[in-house]
Amino acid sequence: MAVVADNGLTDGMSRTVVQNLKTLYMDLLRPIELESSFGHFNDAVLTVSELEARPQVLLIGQYSTGKTSLIKWVTGINSAFFDIRPQPSTDKFMAVVHGDEEKVINGDAATCLPKLPYSGLSRFGSSFLSKFQVLVEDADILKQITFMDTPGVLSGDKQRISRGYDFMKVCRWLASRSDLILLLFDAHKLDISDEFKEVIESIKGDGDKCRCVLNKADEIDGENLVKVYGALMWNLGKILQTPEVARMYVGSFWDEDYKCKDLERLLNQDRKDLVQELKDLPRNVCVRRVNEVVARARAVKVHLALCCALRARLPSLGWCGRRQRRQRWLTEHLPEVYAEVMKEYEFAAGDMPALEHFKERLRGFKDFRSFQRSCRSQQETLNKLIHHEIPRLMALVGGVSASDLGHKANGTCAISSHDFAPEGLNGKGRGEPGRGWCCWLLVILLLVVKSFSRPDYSLDHSTGRPSLSLSRLLLNCHPKC
Image 1 (cartoon, rainbow, N blue to C red):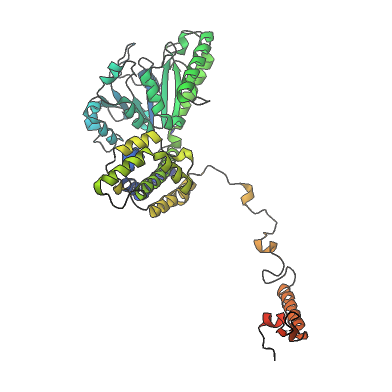
Image 2 (image 1 turned 90 degrees about the vertical axis):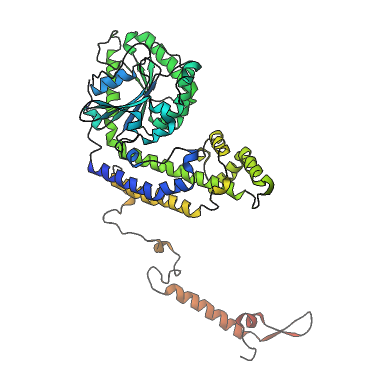
């Protein structure tokens, strides 16, 4: 079954939004990331090819869960490069992209192609790049969506060590740059290996993009399928530590006939729902790109505040290793710095980076003096980006209607705030201009006349001497006036 995606990415408005977003990121956000060493603590800066890339679907699962078979089913590609066997067969990361003719591009060359968003993968070294390939195929859906197949997750420590690269970090990098993450499970094998648990935990930050796929569900009857579904949801809930688990698609995602037809209608419906979500990816790509840049800008704001706070707490003189001792002390007492920054900048606890991860990266930072002393101007730039430039860009997307309360009703008079001011305070009354000021002037004149009608001097009973009247003192007049 070959899926044809909606042609949402080629829409002129989507291109305009993505191009303007690229300009904002390159001109405003990217320079701040570089100056503040944001890439040392978080993901590296985004590239132009990553911002302009097609939506990417990342497939992760244990071996023999049907990852490659699902790609084959969706794209309709029957390629010799798809190695599908019951035992572990795929030992490479393989990106499936669109091109005029079928060919394979190896990892080192793929990271150098400007049309592909994989230049950042070079950071994982030659051991990983030797296990990375790009498969070019001429399929209609690949014009709008890119698929990333991954090796089957292993269970033993010996196999994991033999990979030669950090599988979890690679998956986390790919997840942060993917638009949809499919976690595949076999209905016959519900045990989640330790490495798979680590991978799922590492991509928690992208949980809104995760979907679960319970594959090969046609091979068991309806009663047992319900038990399998409940057990899998229970296991995932313990790993993710959330009351609700991501949307789960149940079915058999290949072109073969169902072996057990008890739940055929339900399985077909989930297949249609998954296909529809894939079709919707290109249509919403510009909104997701905007969301990613805004989230990144907020993370940079917090990072700047933390770095400035650490820099301000360094001693002015660092003789005899005093500065190094202070850096170690600040690293160990990082929760106190977090609390002060949250109070000063009014950050929520959810805005702060993971404490242990930030502490680990901070230990590898040589000198806190490279942090900036003040980040006020940069914070203002980020606030301008988040509160002014991005909303102006999102106005081009549209799709949200304005509230009727924001419009003037036909046939009614608009009431200004001056109509609710006390009479006379705005320089005129409601029916007679200047009446308020006349009343105040009349009161003042009456007070002046009353003060002059009294004697200039009064007798002070305590001393027996005459004293200047209070009205004279208030009016500051000479007694002979």
